[in-house]
Image (cartoon, rainbow, N blue to C red; front, side, top):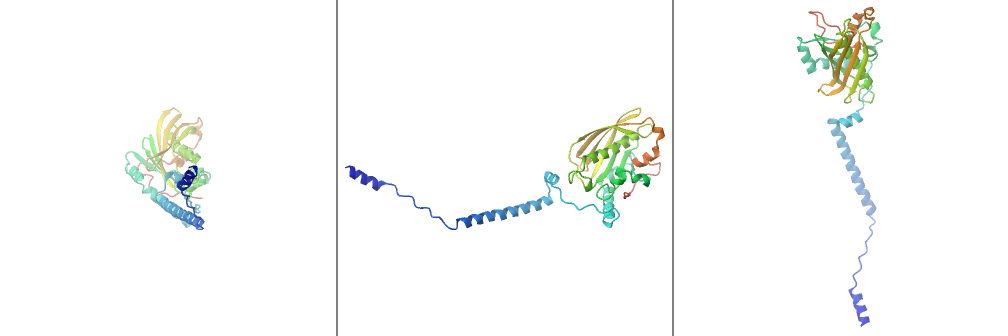
Length: 284
């Protein structure tokens, strides 16, 4: 009986699993699949780059700005052409045309337009930093006739950066200092003063190769002190930097040449003699 059961159990045993055949082509198949994946990734990467060139993502563009050639010499044909193109673009900005048409509220002027050459060459913004790739053209100022507000249009070149593609924060502070100072000085008794304090808040990165609008407004005037608020905006109205500045008229103001200061800031036009039109920066 026991023998019969053992025989029966052997006959009921499960069949063995078939052996797995090892194909010699397994490695080539894997390499083929990897190659297809690599090619697909390369195609996808190329397509993404091409798409990014047309519609560049903001974050990617800030982190990895596109390469730019060095600034051409100021007196080269390329440099002169670049300056002229920026000047033409400035004068045809919709915002500029809107302010220019509002002559009842605003007058127009260009800082450094009549700045003596022997002094200009030693000026940071009018001399050292002027030219293609930097400040290619002089600022364009629209100020209210009562000197309570102003808007300054400035073009920022690629060679004014800290991180490549983003304008240096210290340079933006310099721009704000000069723009606010003009509004402050026009409201001080002797039309001259010095910077006592600047409180700056950087809101967004300021890209190079664009026009900006620096807006200023007189906040308070007390004797020899003037407080001015302001901000830097791009042409879409995005606020990039905010600032408040305190300016003080020195006690020795009567000893200073205020006419030279007015030429630096942009002179207020005399009746019947508006200071408008095309004006190209004098470059070294």
